[in-house]
Length: 277
Image (cartoon, rainbow, N blue to C red; front, side):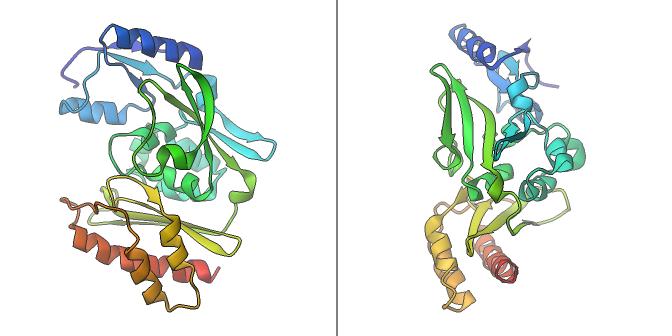
């Protein structure tokens, strides 16, 4: 049970959701957008999230989009991870999403909810970082399209009241060689220690990370070190680790030192597999 009362709204359009947010904010209700609701419920129970109103975006058509427009895949932020896995329009996304929590949770966790959540793993964004995707965002100033790197690479950069509506990915990225590996400290469905996703384009290997820092990220500088194929792999990995952003997480799941140890082994495995594809 959530230990407080809140109002529930179910807008039928993006414009209505934005209007609702603005009005409820003026009333001091601290509204939040709601799709799967797993994080709101989980954090609400321990008073880390408190709101006077939730705005359910699941019934907005644009947030349920799943299909192609010309050569671009369009995915609505309200799609559940299970639905994305079953539809499988983006195999790397399916692989990465399949490792989030357990199936019962994935039935509720949505693409937008995972990417915009307060829990720092947010693994679902990794394939989009690797594919140079774009996001569609709605706010008081209307609807705009921005690079995923400007919004979701590192700490989430959405203004108050902005709503992630869709993610757009060029078709040419969808079937490229890829790998996604998630390492946990314990259990098959526990929180991850580190997730690494990789994709090869134009004979260059791109790599993105979750669980290593307090945010998901992709680093071009780190990739430059990994792709110096004339250099021994262990040396490349050593140089890449020096390019990591900070801070490295140090928590109950694993110390910073242990995470780096696991990362080195993961990077060697990823590079050996990707260079062999």
